[in-house]
Image (cartoon, rainbow, N blue to C red; front, side, top):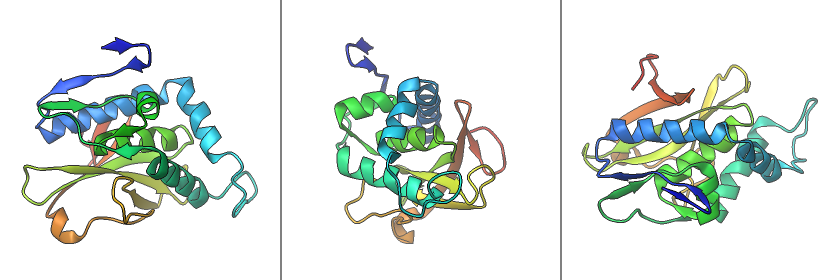
Length: 189
């Protein structure tokens, strides 16, 4: 559906978690390919002075700025019953609201255009109801050795915070690359 504010994909009954993750990966890719996303990310991190090192701001500072910007500026709201909205990053910013997959699209898109490897963790207690949040690789940015969770939808969250293990009985970690989602094994989901 095209509107004056941009393109929005509406998916009915996207209950299959793999399909949802694939759609998130496609929207991250579409967002990364849009020059607006890089300009917006640069604006969010502009003026990053804390821990400045040769070559630019510290990776942790860039990640933190993106996290707190999304957490403070994008309201968490549920999708309408029976529908799954998975918009591009630009549309999430225009709406200033979205559910967990919208937050993932925005966070991963903004960090991806800054050169970070991104992905998501999908969790569930029962295999029916799922929650998704961003993962980002760093240290160093070009060949990550560390990953940090970024769940911007929870009141108590901060960079690195994750829901308690009891809520993560079932867990799928995926990386996003070139419009696709990959498991740790390198197999496409």
